[in-house]
Image 1 (spheres, one colour):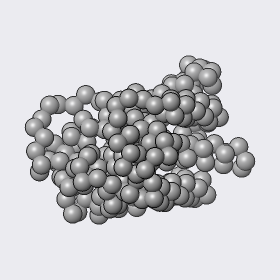
Image 2 (image 1 turned 180 degrees about the vertical axis):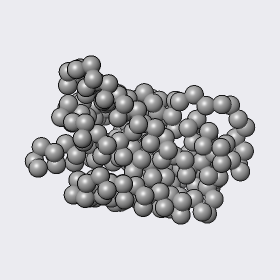
Image 3 (image 1 turned 90 degrees about the vertical axis):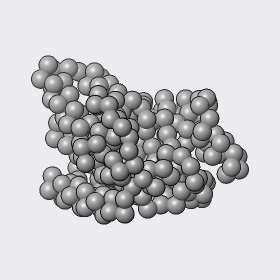
Image 4 (image 1 turned 90 degrees about the horizontal axis):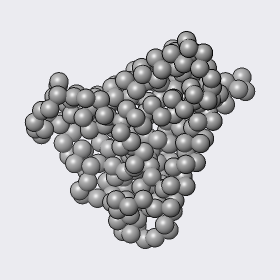
Length: 250
């Protein structure tokens, strides 16, 4: 299990980990530890926001730190999937061409445009948060990774090769049940924090998951690793937006 944890953090974060041999047995349960990466990001976010308040940093600096932190801790692996997916979707090419664009290492114009828009909106939303709302955002980093991990294990793949296909193949049959158990704990955590606000976050994530599944099946014929990254970013952004709007309105 320790090796599975190390593989999960080595794959999905830039947090230094010991070097180990990547055996198939060790990779079997690595997806179960994927949400733990989100827990670490959430913890760092809580601490960073607390420090910003302690030193009386302005909203601009606090928002910049909060928007940048997830990308810095993950190395941008999921944001890369978001950019590739946006590029492919915006091409309006046949499915096979879209799948080719996902693998293209070059960055297209649409990726740059939507990447800038994503960070601008995220920055604006983070400038409106308060310390009492940060736990909901932090829990979203766990929630999004549980749903992303589930998508890799249960949804149809667009290709027989690639990160999503290999991760699904390596995962044991019990992995999806472990992820579902983690999902139950995460949902409980949201409702314990605040039933109404928590329910809004839960519904936002569920809506993103349904959109992700339908979009992936209709546009790409299934999911890929890039699409899973796209979903994760959209899910986290949606939870952030819901938290901010709910706090401003109510």
